[in-house]
Length: 467
Image (cartoon, rainbow, N blue to C red):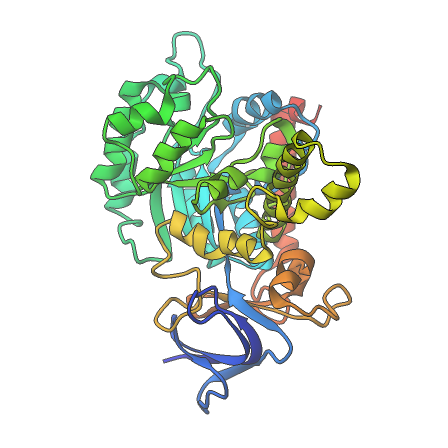
């Protein structure tokens, strides 16, 4: 039996009953939390002195295309259509299984470095079973807790080939994984089905895909926008009528859906994941975070793609919070202007006239990135909060950097000030994956060389990605 005792920290439990503990220890045995409280005595445990630091649940990333970890920072100035053309139709077909492995490993290790302990790897760059296996190999090697979302590639069809939107999800591949290496729902890496959904396939493909995921007892997930060109015109209203919508489904983006469709989704128990860092860059509508809050739901968030957006969850929660606050403020100002209030009245009245009644709280954003994201992945019974009996997925954030020095409120310190460099320790299932600021056992020079060689080959094969 291995034991680890973290001592003397401010503990943000993210548990509604326990709340924030001003000074406490956390005792871990093997892969689980066994005790949280002041002055825990255990002479057999390895110790981490966290005096003055913050201990909290590891961040949960609810949406990431991790295979893009080796082609970062090429698309931040693209228009939205460029991503599909240059990445899915251009670079993706050039990927070998080794390229998928390297990109996924770089992306997964970066998640650990930034304090993420659980990742929904929404993998749609798996043209062959070898590509799929390479991505899973990388996740397993990283040590991260991950939901591997088996997606499908979306190339431009060659003459005579069917369009990807007409092809149901490959049931044989889901069966191979479900009966093979990803058979257990209690393992560190588990399986989900990333299907086309009602925007990218017609109703018959939707019927097959939703039922397939349910047949195998899997979470299903789909990219949705809700634009007029969606292939099932009334989207999730039709999916709900078919009896296919429920808590075992996750919806990503959905910026343009109407309130009726949003309410049907929330009432079904399905989860909705917004990625404001990407959505605010190319879509002139509100990300779904604020709309979900106003309807009484709990949003889920993620970074999405590192082609044009940082993959860290600290960045994702900040952008999500600022986006929600912005739209609340705009709506409040609009309402006050309609009443004829002058500028001085607006300044006085604005804080109490926001849509939510008050600014979206920093603690809310931390919930999205921990327990709410865990709930979206159907893992909240295991992770997302620090409670005895749950898995030991947690992070230690130090306050001795010049950026964190002097921070008072622990939640505000994490949400608004902390960086990846302040995350000193990352523990997943009781294993130290980052300790004293370093990732033990990672040969950065070798990994960097492999990443550079992969990127060089990919851009040589499709140079238009860099234009």
